[in-house]
Amino acid sequence: MTLPESEYNRNLGMFQVRVEFLSENGQVLATSRRPCMLRFRTEPIRLVRTFLKIAPLVSGYVSETQTLKVKLKGFSEKDVVSTACVKVMIEQRAEFRGGAGVPEIYEASLLLESELPFLKRMIWNWRRTLFVWISMCLFVTELVFVRCLIIPRAGQRT
Image (cartoon, rainbow, N blue to C red; front, side):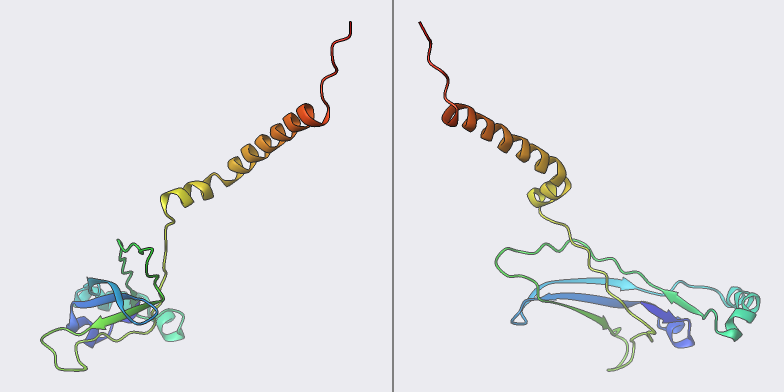
């Protein structure tokens, strides 16, 4: 998430990010929550940084934003029901009334990384080696078949 370094976001402090994995019929399969907050910078440090970056700020080359990376781990999909949707919510703090306590956001994106089950992961990592071994086994089987059935041994002559 890209958040502006506004007065509102600085005063907000911590907030919660909740992720729900939903099935096709809208049933919640798993939920995960993570607390987040902007990095704190004191007023003198922010003023010095703004003064040093005045030219890029005025030209629009840079902006006073912070990027938060929220990593949520540990969800494993069951064989019975598959995940159809991921719902990301930013929860307001308990001390605020409805609609308040949610940070200002410029941009948000979601990167979903998954890992295959053990057997599929091993097959994927060793796919070239498996291809070579299967090809060699088929070739040897064909040689044995051709040698035994199609070209029989000649009988012993006396």
